Every structure is written in structure tokens, then in C-alpha cells.
Image (cartoon, rainbow over all chains, first blue to last red):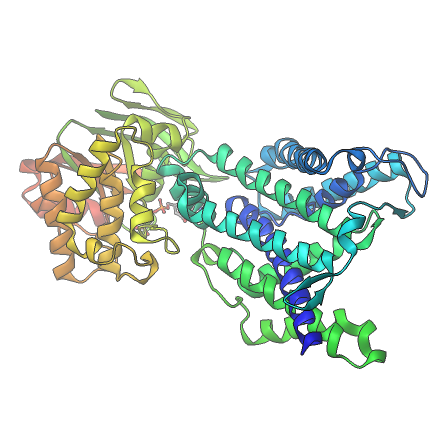
Length: 304
Length: 239
Ligand SMILES: Nc1ncnc2c1ncn2[C@@H]1O[C@H](COP(=O)(O)OP(=O)(O)OP(=O)(O)O)[C@@H](O)[C@H]1O
Ligand SMILES: [Mg+2]
């Protein structure tokens, strides 16, 4: 039972993380019809901003050396600014072209950012330790829970709640949802196109920054490909949730997160390396049954 | 109020409007009718700023507006309900109306307008907190109209208000349009058929293949055979 609850906490933690990344991807897709592969690199850049650019395997700290509140602020701010710059430079000029062009542009941005990291930091993985105190297990109601898992779950859930409240309760949030569903109609009613797109990218950046920190606390390593796996999972989440649907993105995030953790926990030892294959198989099965995803939106079907 | 002069617009190589002139005066109800593919929707998309004309000019209340984006033009008092209504299906009725009123600064007035709109369309009050995607076609049309009224436009353009609606519901929609016009709202309405047009129109344009082939005041067009001839392209002087 105790093991099950630990697994459950892990599952909710990972599920919330994927839900967050999936929301970021879904928001940008909604307002721009862009599947932003560079989302992975926002995560990676956030993580690397913790250390000073050198080729060393155990580099000295940059933002990672700051008091924690300042560290979070600096990392999140850098990634947000980065996301806004990529929007301005690589996506906005292409806004009226077709989705394929945008997609290719996002691949270009992704490779560009990876190359930039390699140029300044070298290509080899590095180890960093931030939040070492958090890795100790903590007691909750007599249960020993990994500190990192608990932190991840709390932060991700909190962020998710804040984001949902923002989208549901504030005027800008409602505009953003309207624009994500039907961009032209939103513009006809006065929603400023450039502003909502910038806000969607800013949210991507904020989420990317926070998630990068959670990942580094968890793994203690920096790797130029570290953003890819969570982002790929989040893409699957948006697809099985029904691309264009924000509730679908959250739902999909939890499905892939929970699947992944439960497979890891309950598969026989020798099959665990195939966990990802297992998750992807289930994703494919879901798509075979519901090709349009679990929650079908009009946004995915038509465009003015 | 609105003057479209020799406007040309299209999609890539396809020219959908080939030099169109249209005038709408304050307080009028102007209809543009024409068969499928005539360019009616293109006309409204271009006036509203969703598309940029490649030649010609558009003036609204005296100012050139061609080339301006829709988010600017709606603040100038131009509203469009596009073909197929385009309500936000995943938002609630209330949120749809809020987005409609978003450009307004006068929050007290917005609240009283909201009440007025909900009195006009009682079904929207009933479904206020419900998701708009679950409304029926007629209810969605009412929501689309209500949402546009909350913008407080000077000119409301509607693309096929009767599309997909039962005759009885069309009656209701036209009834509310008539009432809106009586309160001073100018209307530019696109319809595919000439059936409903006569009861409300001050002036009618017939559009075919991207050109105006006939225009006239209601009084001049009481003989509907000329209208039908232009519509179907029989008329010899229709260029
Ligand atoms: N998005 C688009 N891309 C390319 N061509 C288009 C597009 N929209 C319309 N067209 C073409 O432009 C021409 C005019 O279309 P438009 O939609 O304005 O016609 P319409 O008069 O509104 O017709 P309907 O009564 O069927 O709504 C048609 O030939 C159509 O095929
Ligand atoms: Mg049309």
C-alpha cells in the first residue's frame, strides 16, 4: 500500500509535469497552428542557465549559485525572454504562411539553440547539484515520500491550478482561449493578434523555466537532449487529448504520465527498459480507436 | 458610411472580386445576394480586414480603412458575423459575450447592454453558464448576433444569417435584425437567395463571378424578374 501511494505521487507529479508542457504546446498551437518543437530547447536552455558557460563537466554555478528565489526568477525570466525572442524572430514573420513552414522553422530554432548550447557549454553531459536538501525523503502522515517527487507534484499542481484559473477567470485568459479556438473570430472581436501570441509564448517560457528546474533537481545532470523526452511525451499528450483542446492537453498529460510511472513500477524487472515502448503502444492504440483524440474540438477541424 | 470602390481581392492566383463598388449609408439595410462562389464572403472578409484588397479602396466614415487589421477596425465600429457564425464553442455563453464586449471601456454601459441583450435573447440567459457548443444552430446564431451587438458597432455585417436554419427560426432572426435596425444600427447582409431580402432591404446588390451585376433600391426592384435574371445571369445588359 505504501509503495502504491508512492507510485501514485510519482504518477501525479509526472502527469502534472506533462500536462503543463502539453498546455504550453496546446496554447501555442491554438493561436498559431504551430507545433513548437523548440519547446524542448526552452527546457534545456533553462537548465543550462544555471551554470557558467565552460566545457567543464562539473561547471561552477551561474544562476544556480544565487539564493533560491532569485535563481528561480532569473531562470524563468531568461527562458521567457528566449521564448519571446524566438516568436518574434522565427515565427511571427511566418505567421501567414502554412503550418508546414512554421513547423520547419521550429525545427530550425530547435537545432539552432542546441548548437548554441554546444558552442558555449560543450556537448558532454554535466552534473550540477541544486536543491540537494530537497532530495531527502520527507514524512507525510507517516509515509516516507521522496522530497523531489513531493516538490514536483506540489509545484506542478499549483502551476496547473494557477494557469487554469488564469485561463478561466481573467479577461486575458478568456481572450487567449477564444483565440486558441478561433483565431480569426477573436481578431474580429478586437483580440490583438500579436499580444495573445506573445502571451502564449510567454506562458511556454515560464512553464519551460520552472520545469527545467524541477528536472535538474530530479536528475542532477545537464544534457543538450534533456528537454526532448518530456516534450515528446507532451506532444503525445496533446495528440491523444485532441489537438487544439486545452482540457484535452491536460487530460493527455496525466494519461501519459500515469501510464509511464505505473509501467515503470509494475512491469517485471527485465521489461522496464521497454517502458517508453509500452507507453507509445498504448498511445497508438488510443489513436486507433479515437483518431481525433479524446476531446474533439472545432479548432482542429476548420480554419477560416 | 461605407464606400467600397473598384475593389479587387482574391486568394493567391484566384481573383474572387474583380472591381466591386458598394455603398452603404447610415441607417440602411443593404443586401448583397449571389450564387455560390460569387465572392460574397470574400467581400465581407475584405471589408472587415481579414483580407487585404489588391486594388481599389474602402472608406468607412470618411477614412481609408483598407489594409487595416480586424482588431483595429472593430474598434472603429465595424463588426462582422462570418459565414457559419463562429461562436467560441468551448467557451461558455457568458464568456462568448464577454469577448464581444472586450473592446468597450465603459463597464457600467456594458452591464446594461448585457441585460438588454439577455432580454432580447432569453435563451442566452437560460444557458448563460453553459458551454456554447451545445447550443442549437438557431441559438448559436442568436449568440453570434448578441456577441456582435455588445461591440456596439456602427455597421454590422452578417454573412448568411439564415444558413442552416428552419424557416421559423429565420423569422426570429430577421425579426431581431429589423429591431436592431430600428434602433439605428446599419446592416450589410449577405444572403445566397433573394427569398427573404425584400422584407428588410433598403438596397440590394447582386454579385456574380466577383462583379456587381445589378444594384437598386427596394422600390426599383419590386419586379423580381429583373433580380432573378441578374442572379441567374440571363440578363443581356448584365456585364
Ligand atoms: N480560402 C480560400 N482559398 C482559396 N479560394 C477561396 C477561398 N475562399 C473562397 N475562395 C474562392 O473564392 C471565390 C469566392 O468565394 P466566396 O466564399 O467569397 O463565395 P460566396 O459568394 O461567399 O459563396 P457561398 O454562397 O457559397 O458562401 C470562390 O471561387 C471560392 O472558391
Ligand atoms: Mg459565402
